[in-house]
Length: 115
Length: 114
Image (cartoon, rainbow over all chains, first blue to last red; front, top):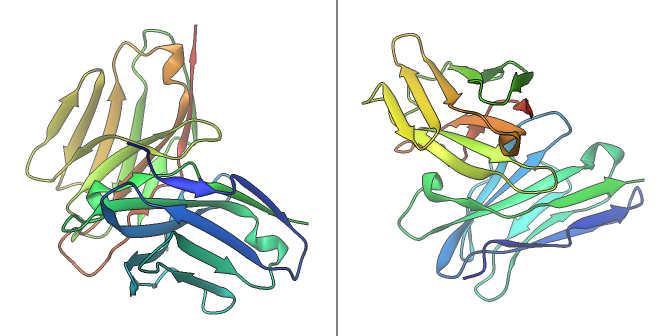
């Protein structure tokens, strides 16, 4: 039973490019959460999605960031026109339907570096 | 505004000692308080969690103490081992309310010296 899979593990982008981060939840999980971790900081909640629905995006920056969780395939966190301040580790967590964030399991993260 | 304050930022303890990590929260609606362990290059892993209806919870060498009136909770690691060296995060959530994301502390870098 594979855990939460995130790819790529490391991503380098030049300023102005787009970054696409993928998250495949654990088998049987239909809830996905994205968090951002800046150096020496705790994780900050970004967005909560269920299949084909964004439930809570209160932690997402208003511009350049978007997330989706289609009916088929992984959840995608998309960052357009990246800037140096976007450099961080981005973690995805998943939980089964009917369970809250308290039952979530984290992936190993994608470390984004903007140069 | 930081809703969960964690201290200390870093901690060095000799093997066999009992490191203690403290967290304080502000939101009285929080009702679930997990601790996560994170090794370098890895994602956070749930270690132990507590709800405010109990004052202490123990799982193996890990114990959470909870003080509802003071809005504080702490993690104790008994008989600490070098393999416990990691970053530890406390977190909190209002599991029945509108918030869907955990609120994390800033983390404690723990080093257990052999």
